[in-house]
Image (cartoon, rainbow, N blue to C red; front, side):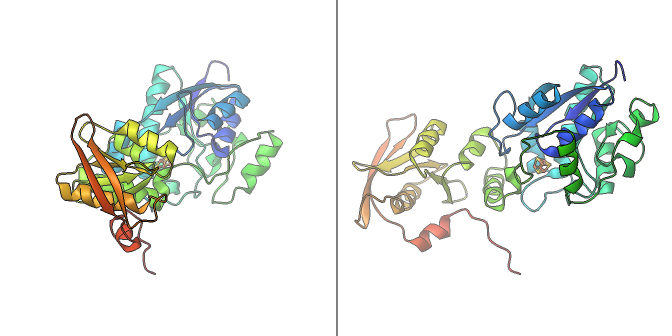
Length: 342
Ligand code: SF4
């Protein structure tokens, strides 16, 4: 269809690749947009995640990368439609991304949006009614085309106006990916990532650390979120938490992320982990953090370890002899996911 443009949401996975391809094959110019959030597992670069870039290259289409931060934190803190099993606000997330894609649609003079969503594939955001509700909330009713499930969904404006032929789209529903895999073979789509990747917010062990930040700080920020991707985390008090690096590379990154006023605590004279204490109000919290850091000092067989703590951005320093915390104490303070009892 000459002259018709569409904006396609590209995640890098198989479904969005197929969806965009099915629309492009009908002569529509598709511009892909990839939204990068601080919780993507794909270690995105400025140019977008590598699987998105290779997908756009394979499809021969332009890729626009947009980064979501503050507004994304806001929907995690206050999701209108709630969280999934982790802390994933999937419905709000889809609405936000479609709103942003809609802004791009207007900017680029495109006519409609394309997604790789499949009816019934995901429990929270891809039920039939939820898809329709997301569409309404996004502010673009009738303009969101989902080629993989188009024939089991109401006809969209692009189909009604003949910009695309509905009969060339599919009627996939449910979690099985058999049809998509077969179609990928037919269309020579290769090297797509397995569907297990995606979003750290769905991982209970990670989600519990994000929740801890929201409960104790009220708000998320980029620095705190970068820190929770590293090391072991302990809640020392309502205001104070400790992060302990697991290896040299983590120690260096934790040091780089330290803010003025944070305490950095490390072994004196022998190799060991770096601890970062944020929000400490009293020397007892430094002493407690010292015991927890000492637990991870493998170079010493002694029951106690000599440590140095310094306040970042100031000359304030404390030297302490810290008794190693035992396993029970470590577990008492560790921020961890508690399995629900059956
Ligand atoms: S899993 Fe994460 S990225 Fe995907 S829709 Fe849910 S919140 Fe958004």
